[in-house]
Length: 323
Image (cartoon, rainbow, N blue to C red; front, side, top):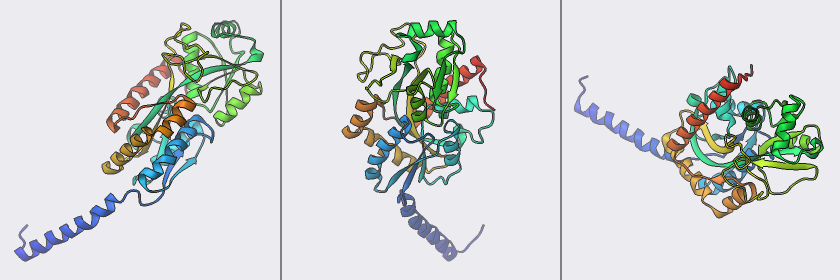
């Protein structure tokens, strides 16, 4: 294309003006409140983690960070909502293991976590424990397993919903122990625990949420290489002879695919700084046993890919499907 010098200068000038004008807009993130969407009910472990991070993230970003609960379908309603949101970084998704489980479990999610969501920040991981209602009449993990083998399908277990971590962790437990249990899903972790406490179900594998024991409930085992400081009297599955049952519940933050790299990096740095705060460590580690592990975006992405492959293998081995 042949243009005169004056036109060329004007052309370059317009481009320069556009660049100068656009840069401050791109850098001014966030420009409105940031919404962190949780796919499970208030009071669930992921909700508690989200609120602990959001409270401090507001200070780091200089803008309000709001937690919004959209429970249902094992977290997939929330994930689908965020996958379709604007990719400007103002709508984020707080995730747990279910984000890696769902692609293997559901035939048609309506979204693909690998291509429709962007890893932003890894928060940490905590153990799960196995609790039974004392009406079952067992006092150890071996007694529970023996009873379950002698009575296939008789024992009921609750969960926070089909496809959620407690559900799939219990599916994995059955595979490891050679037992058969009956699943009764609830709308959230709080409802699942209430069902156990009320005797509507016999057992629950759930994220460790504190140190206190409840009357009528007995904790038989906990995951992890070592006993938890929150439950020092509870043996690990590993020490009881079940090292393969090594499920932990992890937490992280994702956003819609297409988010600007600068925004992703800004959020990753801000979340990692939040995780280094003593008040956050006290709230999440000391109270709930979550080991905080700041990671880069790339490290988080690799972690998710490995976990997706893990659950794909389990689903293939067990043959479990959800239409």
